[in-house]
Image 1 (spheres, one colour):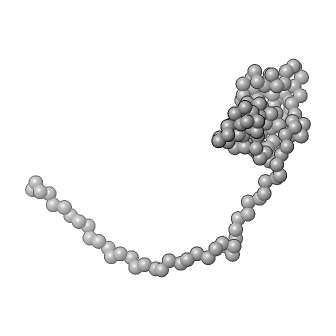
Image 2 (cartoon, helix red, strand yellow):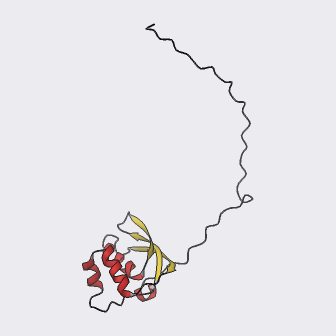
Image 3 (tube, one colour):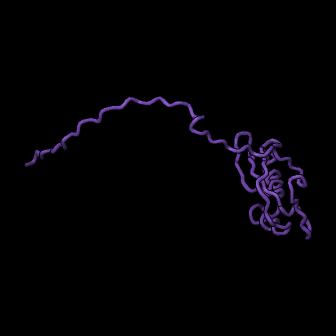
Length: 133
């Protein structure tokens, strides 16, 4: 079963990054957040990895994580045939994530070197005398 990393849009102004989402879980999240997100609940889903999980195990995992009545409504009956790929779920993935390029020291801009400053002279501790004595 495929998994993806994506951003769930819960409203017009609020998004949540979600990692390791299966195709069936993505369908559940879209169903839950469809209205609040004005029809566009899933954003920038990129393929992450494959996991070994059959339809029944995924169904039980989703029932434990989300409202079981929503899950039962989406996949009724005894034989649970949940999507194994995002193509089966009808979810389009965005392009694969671009690797993060860490600049080498030669690529970094030159830093201004601060002039050396002489250290301050060491101060003697101040001893306070009591006014009561």
